[in-house]
Length: 94
Image (cartoon, rainbow, N blue to C red):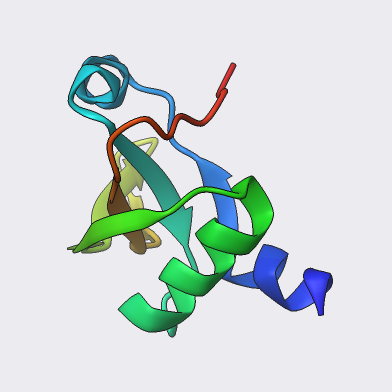
């Protein structure tokens, strides 16, 4: 089921830090908050046709935001996965 894999992997994160980590064969993705490492590994291997060596998970907490001094709210938190690929495998992220 290809659509289930795309529900787990939302999109690649393209930041300065994430782009620098590509040299070490590490790619960063925003993933579903309920996803486990094994599910993320299966999804990455199936979608991008590569072999995953290691996965690190980072839970980003919600951040408090204010708007016009009185209205306060929260920017929702999310989960990101830093995926290390085996030697020789690459993902083309633009």
